[in-house]
Image (cartoon, rainbow, N blue to C red):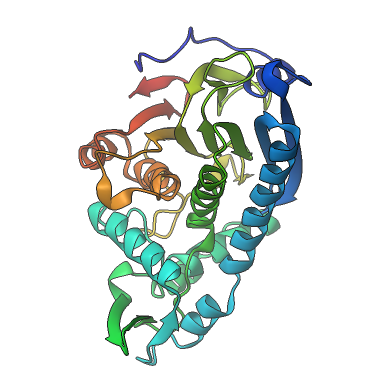
Length: 348
């Protein structure tokens, strides 16, 4: 069991919220705890900053701007152009930032043997429609969508032109799509962290729908931020298994309890195994991954710990406990909580 765990227990949603987002007005040295809540990226984002009043409000504004920009970029022209050219062999120019993101995503795709696949957009769109209709797609539709998936068919290159680097990408199969949802929250956490770090913010929390969380410094009590780990099989949405302290770390959670539908007694959730085309069935109901922000042991990922945690939680969910642990061997700083379909913690 993870040593940082407190005693495992259940408690109501209101209490969990109070523990994880303990706020009050003013404190010593002119510091205030300011909070902003906004519906963005399909979830409720809560930003909390503890600093002097002017700095806090500026940091909240900057954080919201990052969220808005991340959402716009996910639906941006570059990705749309890349998808439109899929199967033609044409290279599409992309920004250095998007090039780097896709390169890192490809790294996790290779290490997970395709359990995480950034090109799974056709599949995730198919199952999102199924969730809306509460009816699983036919085997023929799943097979058709799978034919448009394959990280090996995403090619990237960077060239020097006139003293500048030109970054390009192409999708080699017609109909291929980038799975935007697989990256967006992790990218948002990294963007907020960079913005707040540049503003010298020491103590802050960014909570993107409880599944992606950035914790900087400490809360008003001078302790790490206290994050409730939700029980995916709890009787109520706020039932939790444990409280996890988070300080200068990111947390990402992937579970089958939020976006799902039931059909003929079977749960169809949004975490799709790109290798089969169907929701992953590995005996896991939730995977929680935490990583330190500094990333000293992972220099290639420095500044991208939110993205890494996001991708790892998805990959481990799809791989299952045994194969997931093998993947984690490549990322020693990561701590993971595995929760089985009976709602019990089964490993770390």
